[in-house]
Image (cartoon, rainbow, N blue to C red):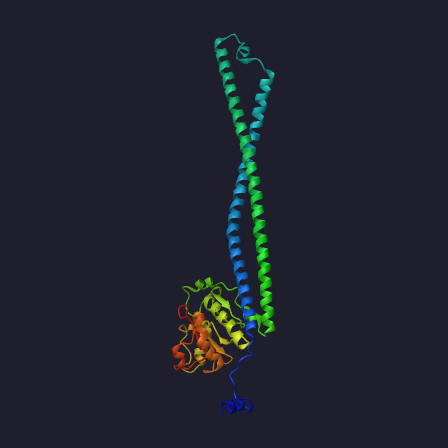
Length: 343
């Protein structure tokens, strides 16, 4: 009896069978999982290295600023030394002209007051000379130290920057290769890589940009694009939806069919004006306006279909769910919502 029923399903025209793609061998599924893991790990490593590069780039910029400051100090030291060259030259000339005169040799006026003044001047000149020579020596030593610091800073900064860039280049190549491997495997299975990788560049943290904005007026920089043209969700909801879409694509061979996602206020008002009472939320109250709801097609709109049943059984893994009200009031099997705490 059971055998006859199964045969009838395949022979009777018009009989419907829930769509299910030809199952891949377990080894093929394992291969896809390994490639996905490899691509995800490469992407994570690249993201970590990029964050590290950004952090160290800030440190390198600080080092560069220190280098600029050091070079400025060096320049000022050289200017001060240049200002001292003329007095030092004059001092040298005086000593050259009277190399052995000393104090007594200069005291030739024969007048005590004048002699005392000359002696005081000579002693002061000797003190000034020593102070000037000491200062020049200190400045020359400071100049030498600053030049060495500048050279070390420049060499260290350039070396670190090269090392960071080389590391990033290597990780970029690894990420690219692993992504290409995964892309090839997806194409070999007849899956759409573009739909599969949609949202890869979406940053979940930008969902915070929606804080304080009213329903239906979320800023574009809080939303992320979905795998269907013109469809968006709040960033965190988009990322989880696209992860769910990857699993859905593996199960059904195509991405989820979308008729609506984020709906701005003007579209909410248009829809409310064209729908019968109770069939559309009052503008400004819809979860579509928060970027946290989708309306689906491609089989999901039919309760009991393979697609609907799969979502009902699996969607909470990615924080998506079919709200209780949508089972009856009004009946909307196509409507699904996001709640980060629901899963």
